[in-house]
Image (cartoon, rainbow, N blue to C red; front, side, top):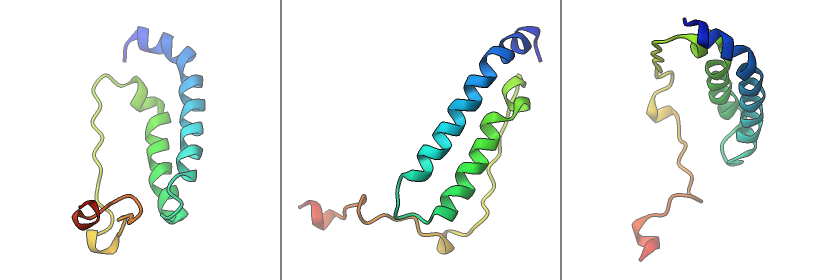
Length: 89
């Protein structure tokens, strides 16, 4: 952790915090066809990563995402967005 990071942190952290929360709530309103519980879980975890001071002040950061659910149990295919080849022709 550097002295410059600590100095800038006090000025930029409030902006990062407000911006992250605004994005969290905005993203929850998008894609109404996806259940809100799924979106809340995913975006809440992302929010925690974004506003964690340790993540923001660390020089070397590695975030590892773990698969929690099997692909066969999660279906995020949105027919309104994805068009099959037959529909394009």
